[in-house]
Length: 391
Image (cartoon, rainbow, N blue to C red; front, side, top):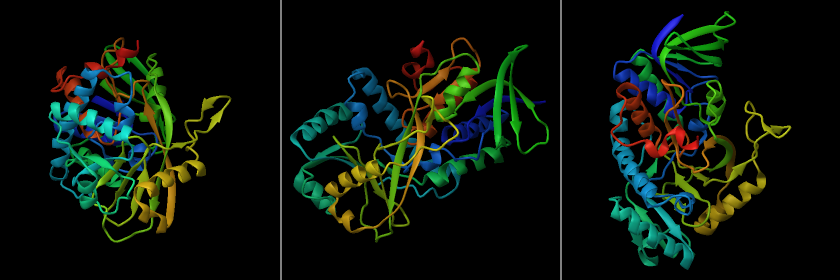
């Protein structure tokens, strides 16, 4: 039986980054992944780094000024962390932080950006509201329907195929044991320790055990299944999303583009392809009304058309490009769209870190939850994101 200080369940970005930060602080760590590292949403998203309040979040009536302020402070922490990430991980992540626009086409959109910019600037986030002439001078590829934009010079994008493996490699160099193709079958608390029962196709043994002082659940859309093993219902909803990629073209889109009132996220990557998304849904496969968690989300041609229609409205040159691939990923969202970060109240030593724009904030969530596990406190308050808010 192998013994560890912490066992991390889930080999996505938050899981691999947490394993790195925990190991860096001297903890012995096992990382348990049902498939392969970065196989889920962490490797299937478009790599956008949205530090402005996204329109889906800002428009929510559930969030008061206090929560919005917390999010803006968290964004500034994440920005600082991202700027040093390539040096810390000692590798090229195709990280570009040259700024991002949230564009507006209507008077309502512009009013929304005006309100948002006041909140963000008051909390110290660097954003600038630009008029029609200013935005088209900086981004001539945008169409005439774009009347204004909120510019954040710290936004950008990163290659999701590189980031999580880089954290995993650094964690492994610090003696993290990474167990892939390893399925958790049960979790028990006995004699002051957690025991994780699992099966692995890497071993001829039918079942094996890991004993650990603490467990961190970073299983993303599957975090609810892991939570039920300790009798805690995480009200996470799996959500399938679609991404699209065009053929390669010479570099000319230098910014991340999102929209104040429509679903759009767009950027040009190092290879020259344009990645287009923005929250358009993919269909989850179900049986008898239940999500089949071992099946991929199905790509919807209607969603692709609608996504590309928004993109071509904003940047008309896209009409002349060939779409070469569309794919889906599955994320987990809480009812309030905030992350779930903290310790399960009735299960001391069992922690959760998932949800809430997990690519942009994944490294930050991982650093903070690692602080909580090791020190019992964090450098940024996690109370608004605690699992017990659902109890």
